[in-house]
Amino acid sequence: MKIGQNLAAARRKVGLSQESVAADLGVSRQTISKWETDETLPDIYQSKKLASLYQLTLDKLVSFDEDIDRIEHAIMHTPKSVEQKVDWTAMWAQKYPVLASYPQTVAIDKYAGELRRQIAELQRNYGYSRQDAFLVLKDILAKQLKA
Image 1 (cartoon, one colour):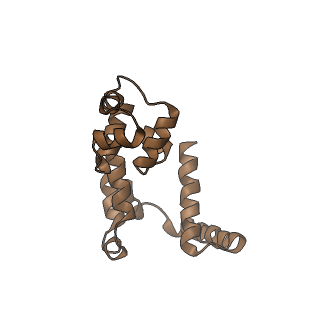
Image 2: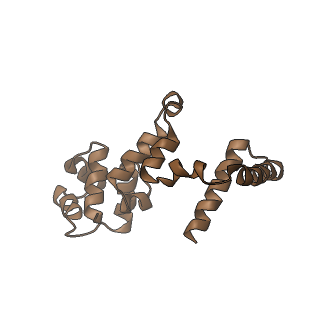
Image 3: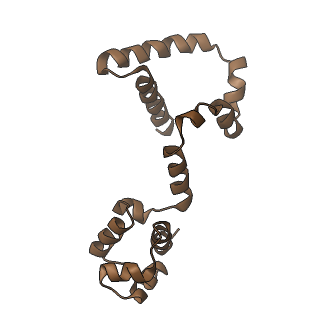
């Protein structure tokens, strides 16, 4: 997605017209239109004002993606009662089938014991809750996968 599309999508998301944004920034509606069609780009000062107006960080404004925004919003606003009803392993297994098949082939107890020790160590050394220690280990593993 181009920056102009990001600007237009972010503006629409907060329900503002080009006219109202132009008035807030002290520019013409045509200027907003040119930014949104990638004919020109706002300068850094105007970009900061736009980000504030659209309730985004400047970085988020430049990389704004409506699909990602919708997913993030859904995650952040899903009630605990609904989260508890979802079979997350089954859901993720649709995307990553190994999650459905590994329990039949992997010696889970062998790895679980070591992971329990690592979780306990994180709890002791850093005062993490059990869940937080698990999330830290998950993040470390994910980073190792990318390395």
